[in-house]
Length: 233
Image (cartoon, rainbow, N blue to C red; front, top):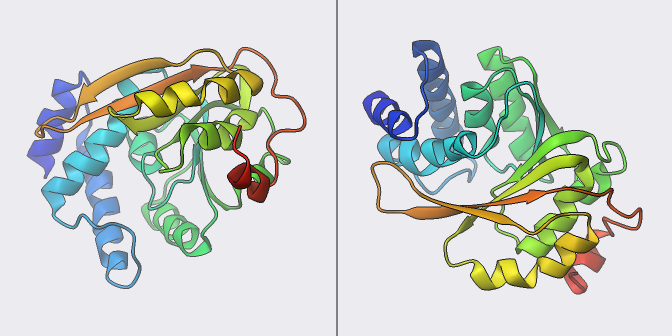
């Protein structure tokens, strides 16, 4: 797994120290151990995890500057992309945000057990968390499976004007992105910039959707999730 990670990161123009590689291995081992009793990932082969989770998450570092930034991972799930992002860029200040308590409990155990600093795991719904951290973050990222118009309403209120929201999507997302245009504009975002990339050591091509926030989000957003889901922007 280490060789695959090293060569994959090099192909992306990134590097990792021996200590960072050890931390990535430690996180994967903890995830696989917990996965025996909790559904965290369907991918259990270490090399596949390295490519499809770790290197995929690292793609964010090729698209934006994360050093010294405050970052929130909205709907972080098992910790992707947030955990690899923080391990590879430890001077970013990261919040892992998820509505499922058992995932946050697992991630907090990793943070504590690995002695990580500058990172927190928060159990909350994104639309409720916005009341506490409205326009607080430089960057919001999300690898969640929700449609982009829904993700935008959950994420952009957390981002400072001038900040960035990055959604990780598949390359077949053209219609979804076009359909989210009205929502993005209403929430203070600019037209998305798209970056397609192939994950090293695979033939999988994914897409980063970068949305710069140019104006404050109107106070009525985000709405309660039942309203978001019933009537997306």
